[in-house]
Image (cartoon, rainbow, N blue to C red; front, side, top):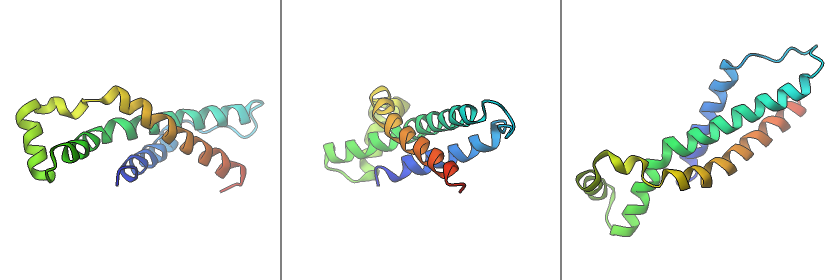
Length: 118
């Protein structure tokens, strides 16, 4: 349950990036290089989105364990104690810890699927 939301978010963002980015012309001299760059842009954006958008879930999950409480009381306690600040608590560490592996996975999957013609 920790990893699934991150990858789901990242895949949705990667798919949207696929729609938003300009296609690479097949007859371009540097088409392969442009495709790799395009895959990198999609992967990093998707990994970052997965890390940032799911950070509050990580905070709440960690607090549930720390407080030994269920979701409701933990969430109420966080809002009472920190207000909306808890939404980005630990964001820097989470971005580094999540973005790199998620982006690498998305990048490799994109490159491999293109190489296989999927």
